[in-house]
Image 1 (tube, rainbow, N blue to C red):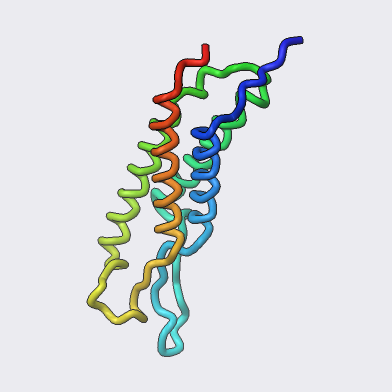
Image 2 (image 1 turned 180 degrees about the vertical axis):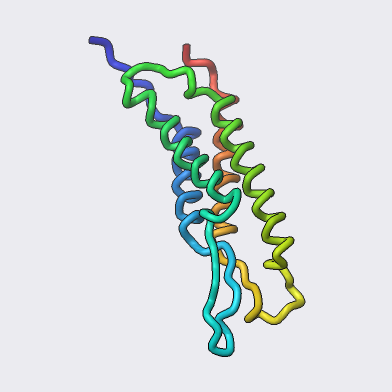
Length: 146
């Protein structure tokens, strides 16, 4: 029985770390409303609107990184176009969600702080998406292992 022993490599480790950062960002709050003057605070994270796509991109990235090692052979999905597609889809969903939040006036910097605030999850997910995009670029620059 032959064994697929290709090392994971720096680019795929970066993709996996980016996916983990995205997952952390998805569960952290992306926005909040209220909470002042005795009013309850309402908020949301990636599981509202198109943010769920960002979460699915992170899960798919982890699957793409681990699939060749789970199957013990090279897999066609473990190539740079797959990672680039995931990064592009994640960024598209992220930007659409940013536009949704801007329409809701979450980013009203002139408004009182107790009205709308943006949470750290939005920015953490953005950093994770940037890591994934860089990983896709690095994977594209690797010599073909076939």
